[in-house]
Length: 287
Image (cartoon, rainbow, N blue to C red; front, top):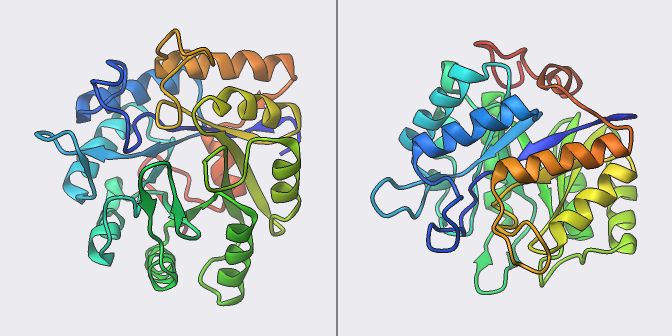
């Protein structure tokens, strides 16, 4: 990536609620507006979660994702759009793959693919081998690129297994997530081992969970990687947890750190070229 860095924006996630922070975007219009603001600040891609309009609980339904994607692409038709296929709340293939059925101008460029099961503080994300393979197969058939999520080095090894099985193809994009209680911790040793073990022809961004977000974003910008940032991973602006963050504040801070490290934002157009994605503006996914 040289001096360019990927900025992957994660505005909502599955955990934050309005009771936790008034700043988290929940409704379709709130998410679209936050992504609109983010695109004006400068981002490379967006990682979207959808919520039910009545319960505000996470939803897998493609009809809700369709509204979000449609709204985002009115403002940013070139932005790379990734939809969450998380297994934290949904266990059936037809649920988790539902967003992948969107087509035309609503087709996602990417879908998240967590590379193993894992435990969070109070819940599990179950990703059985057949589920991972089936989601990868559907994405490959539909020309949607996996956003490979790795919480520890074993998950990177599993990506290489999927490569050998020809279920995924380069170029790859990895989110490397640090600081979860049951996975790789937010330190230089864990980060270095995971980055060093990535398969050839991989682009990557680093995320930190909770208080580790700022530290790991800073580390990645200093050492040549991309950044995943947003209220999905941390609702606080400071590690003392005295100020609730907005997504715009988190993004602007990343730009300040990047400038100090002489890093330049990778545009969606550039990322599309490196990832062999269609050019946007009506053409999405991998041809």
